[in-house]
Length: 194
Image (cartoon, rainbow, N blue to C red):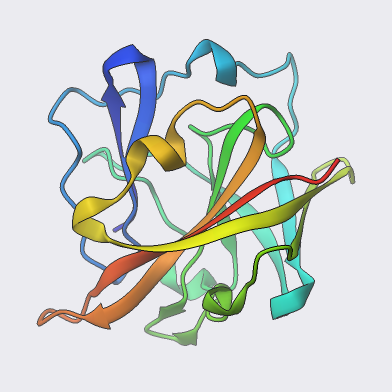
């Protein structure tokens, strides 16, 4: 299971993130989830979905698939047999547009190491390039990383509105609980470089 988007008061799309193979965290509130965007996150007429993400400093070059919501309102994750593929949560902004774009990837699956295995090694200032389906590339610069407990996931900070052209990379992290699920999430924050 993975992120759990929930609607917050002011139409802020919030989510708690939990990767496949990880346990999902309870939502920040129990209101009926929606995938609405605040005015800050309105999209242009015909945005192009991301097709590839590249992070040279940790050797990532991955195709990007689209992820929606599961029936239980958790965010879909790439299938375990596609562990080297990242996913763009379509309820977030298109990378390069104003607002927070969210890319999710496994750090490992039952098949072994996955696309974000080395995400914990990324450092402030690292370059992240996201290419869309038309071959246009937006470059982001990492501004911070954060490891958080899945029970205290900062939904507003990750999924909430922002005037920046922001990118969030999310994976599981930390120790394993008694059921074999990691207890933390690793979040990488980045902003468009230009």
